[in-house]
Image 1 (tube, rainbow, N blue to C red):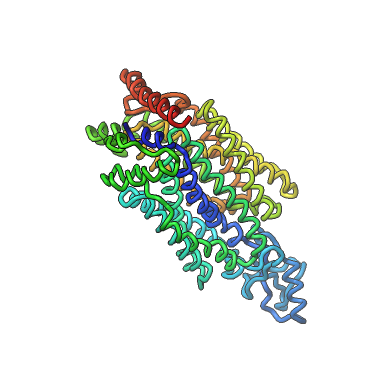
Image 2: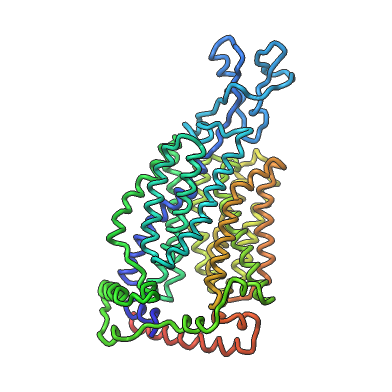
Length: 538
């Protein structure tokens, strides 16, 4: 009897698992806060160069400054018009000089942002995008570091460390004395978020029965969406960036009680020969679920046949690209990870470009995540391939259409962006499941690991993509449109995996004569497990 069968006998998704998912899901709200807060803390208000020349009075100078307020993309906001006498020229076409007197910022929407505090406009505007990219790079580093540490030391301890880093460095960022220290602190917050997201998801799935895993995994996504929506309200009430940063970070210290309530992974304990600890947790879970274990069951030896098979032949990352079919599928999946995350954060972090109220747009972008993730529950069972292809096509087409909408039609442009966000969010949910089924068992973890790294690279490039506005204001949305459309076309080359046995070896993927036999071997224990689970849970 393997661990999944024992887990089903104790209740695949009983009271123990439901309480566990409460502890896992609540931090997701704050993860969303940290992931998307730069939309508000890094916003660029309308601004104008302040005159350094003597004027008739302060009020006159102020009126001039306010009359010259412009958008971040308007180069006129980066110069001071001068005339031959050295005084401000309001409307003539005389030569202009670079801004020497600092900047005037509109306070209509924001009291302060990191842009207004450290003048990240014009020749320093790229620093703002680089800061966001550096934060995303923290996610990449965290995925690599905390992923390996979790395999060595366990999921629970890494989640606790991640929550601690998030609270300490998040609060520290609210008191940063300059932009560079702020960026370094945000980098550390980014590393912690990867550690918490990955290991919370793994901890939940390792405690959940086979039948409920897909639904349980999407539950965490819903809570991320809740955080997405709530951030709009919190940012609307708190217009000062330091207070906002503090408001989303300080509650993280409340998670200290997780030391006493968050369980370890019994599956991980079993795999690391800590069986006594594992059985103690299994007994606790069974008791809480109202299905106490019998003594005979406790005496059985838990083992994993897949691990024994893998010992016979070592596999490495090279196997992902060593054979033709496996290479083609691996490269396509890696690209899909990259494109999905690039466009997801490209849209999420730049909602101010669509011309509507930033708080309303943020809330709508959060709300659209709910139906986007829900619809995948119905489409995935029919076809993984068509679902992935269709949602990528919808997202890419909608993003591409925004470039043909005039800037004064902000409502239509925002609606198209929302449709694009819907498609990409659904596609991003699907790629998790699709990847696990495309890669064979012997290299599945390696494949998903490299896919996750490609996703983080997309996250790093998402803020930097908007540097392409120097080429054309429409260029970022062209990229957001073409990347998913290319991914949609490439998905045609992937196999359909819905209602089919998982590939066990690379030979299964390449079409070996043994693949049919391997499929029958895999299906048998699954049917047996399902019978056991359904008998005991009815």
